[in-house]
Each structure stands twice: as structure tokens, then as C-alpha cells.
Length: 108
Image (cartoon, rainbow, N blue to C red; front, side):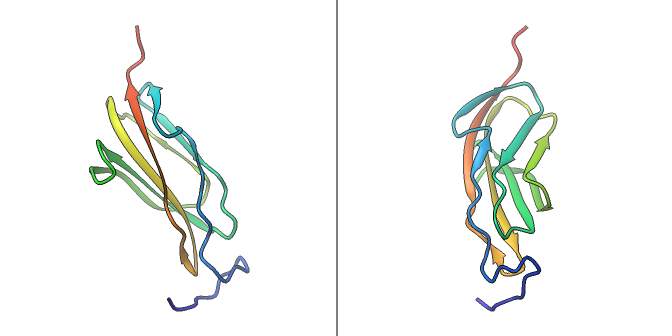
């Protein structure tokens, strides 16, 4: 890999983010889901993906330039979802952290 200068003062790719919410194998109710992950030292942006049914399933969300460590996905239908996030900087992107959750509708 070629070295690229980084404005954060970091000469290496960002560390691995920790998936905070929803946690792996969580059951979530509603249709809007708030995703949260740990701030990553040296990250200047985050890449976030949300897939349906499997880690290689249909791509629902693909955000490549998030500047904060949270994201809300709206109007999701019930089912199983897989999400991943990784921190990036001018030197490249660190390893992705993934989690799975099940979305159910609120009970009436």
C-alpha cells in the first residue's frame, strides 16, 4: 500500500470500530433503527453498509462519507439485517466491524 499523508497526524489506517447499537443478534422493534459505533482514533470518515437477510444480501444502505459515529435508517421492513462499519482516513480504511439484528414491528 502506498503511503498517503493524513491531516489527523496518523500514518496508518484507522483502527477497528466497535458496533455499539444494535448489538449483534439483537431484536429491535419499530421501523427506524439508530446505529451507533465507537469513535475510532485516526478516522476522518466512516463507511457504513446495511444488508438484508445475510452479510452478502441485498444492499439497503451504502454510506461512504459519514463524519459522525451514528446513522439512522428509516422505514425498514421486518426481517434480518446485517450492518457493518469501518473507519477511514487518507491512509485507507481499517477493518470492518459487523453485526446482525432482527427487526420486528411494534406490538399493538
